Length: 293
Ligand code: OGA
Ligand code: MN
Image (tube, protein in one colour):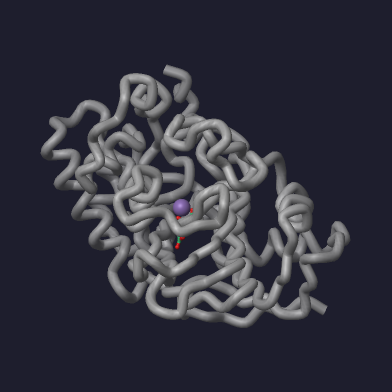
């Protein structure tokens, strides 16, 4: 029998009584979907998943995103099946990437608050991150509740942002860390996409702010004003009361809803092995009717 305990006053459920290495019944999948609609983040402990089992479980929630579209990883450099985002710091041979390795520096963008694939025309629905080898110093993952963030805004701000459209791109988040030496081909894969700033969750009906460090512009606004405003909103959204810090144990599986949360990785020693593997369930639709523009 699956049970859900709470790890934070606002969100994050810890699910017990589930064995994700086995095929799940339709009722079990429905229970997980109901739990994540309510709690936004679910923690499953001690799930010793193979890649195949993680894929099989993830596919029960919809079609999976495939990675490798930016050209930062070259063909032959990928350690995992293309439906995995390799969130590790390892190369194909399982060796820790050098401190100045370009792929490592690029992936340090995960330390900025974000929502997965908000830079894609149809942003991600769920992410499922499996901690295969975790670090014991640092390397936590923090989550922030964007429903609580929305609720915290005053009515004037809610009205002001109701119809705002933001442009998201990996170029913006990487520039923030001084990672600007992108090739033209890489930039072409990272062209900004438009997303609504306010979303309504299709199951819970709750509103949330769709923030990410990938935002570089608000349509119709001067750029510095937009960026200052997004920083202000992000500050509200990531205040300590709205944040859960996940301290990884080996074989934790953490599943989150990218439509109503943000997350970020925390620092850890550059020579420590951290093998984290993410599968990503694609979203159902663009956030705005005219997203094709
Ligand atoms: C991710 C991610 C953070 C971490 O997997 O999408 O941002 O702590 N991970 O590795
Ligand atoms: Mn992420």
